[in-house]
Amino acid sequence: MYLITIDRDSGRPLGRQIVESVIEGIEGGSIGPGDPLPATRRLAAELGVSRFTAEQAYEELWAEGYVEARQGSATRVRMRPPAARPPASGLSVGSPESFLREGLEEVLGTAYEAARPPRALKPGDLDFGRFNLDPRLYPVMDFRRALDKVLAADPAEALSYGPPAGNLRLRAAIAKRMTEHGVATGPEGVVITDGALHGLDLVFRLLLSPGGSFLCESLTFPGAIVLGRVSGLRAIGVAMDGEGIVAKDLVAAYDREVASGRPAPSVLYTMPSFHNPTGSLQGQARREAVLAACSKRNIVVVEDCFEEELGFSGKRAKPLAAMDGEGRVIYAGSFSKVLFPGVRTGWLATTSAFAERLARLRAATGVAGNSLSQAALAEFMESGAYEAHVRRLNRAFARRFERAVEVFGREVPAALARLRLPAGGYLLWAELLPGRGLSGRSAAEVEARVVSACADAGLVVAPGSPFWPGEVGGPCLRLSIAGRDEAEIEEGLGRLGRAVRAALSGFA
Image 1 (cartoon, rainbow, N blue to C red):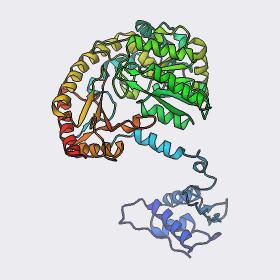
Image 2: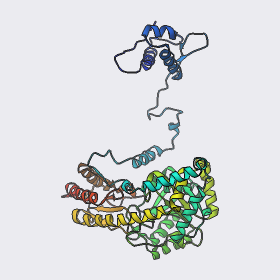
Image 3: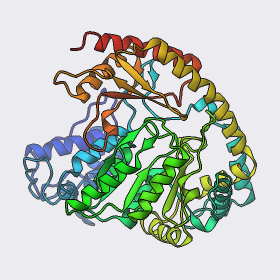
């Protein structure tokens, strides 16, 4: 009979050692199918453990499929089917992952890596890569008071499923805030989402079919590009200038798709206010031209206004949704970049009829959002705390923004990197080696060289290549000052200047 052994000096749980000893015997062939194991009373006595430990070990072996037990009979080794040999791809035949749509594995890997921190930060490192608001500016006490109030008032409602469209008080507060920005809407036209990207996913599902396409700025939010690929859609980039998307180039991109025989793109995803990654701001005349072009070609516009509140530079323009007389524009908002990302709450504002369809899809794919956070946000906005927080945020980032632009100009050699001056927001877009040839080197290679030098200097930055929906226009970096104060901006951009010199000086 096979001898089950344990090692009391190993420090490992005795029950688990029994399990592993039996498995070793089975897989090594010392115990075969149908062989009995010692009764738990006998095993406990032989090993000097409690009977409870022996019984738990046998239950674990049963749960893992190694043994079978019948009432009044000994516990016996179970006949197990032969292990399937995995194919060369590494995916088990018949397993869910073996059915992944072709090309999706790479897309999912890209999305996962983009969502993770750029790398583990060491003490003293400065992160200019992630777009996370400075936790030192979080209105923690005000939000805690809002949470306490809604839990005290009606805990059952705050902790239950909410309506698919979202908390009515929050939708009303958002509609009121949007009306102040010139967008006339009511709570019936607002649907709460789990952030702007979730809202874009809902819109894509309703309006586009796999194999279709959507228009976007060329540059754009990488999350939108990856979402499109996951949904079987192509992102068609439209040329930009310093003011954002160019209307005539939008028309040209649309017409090229139609002329090619492919389905006409029916959605434009755009960020006209403090664009990610360039920080550009479309003027009113440009917005009118873009909206007119979309109207003529019957294109629905998704206006991502994730930084709409950050007009600390004094430059503003009415949202496209405020100029829309056809119900063509879907306004996508988010609290993640103004309040804190962990709240995971955004919204879509549209016609009441389309909002109803969005809510139905929301119910079909996720039931509803987080009732507690939505109720707290409603209380937070109604109390005036949100407005006060936005004012504090704008004052803080007016100073940080001014410092960032000044320090970049002083510390980073203009011959090696040029800053595209943003109109507001948290983001800086730096073009590397402006106006110089790369002598056969790719943009990604140049970016990687600078990113590595920055890492050596204790600075995390984001390479620019993922922001292009098509052909990469040149090596760039995106720098986020969202989480940094003035002293950290000074230090970080000083490190950037030294890293750029080390990586690119003498670059042929």
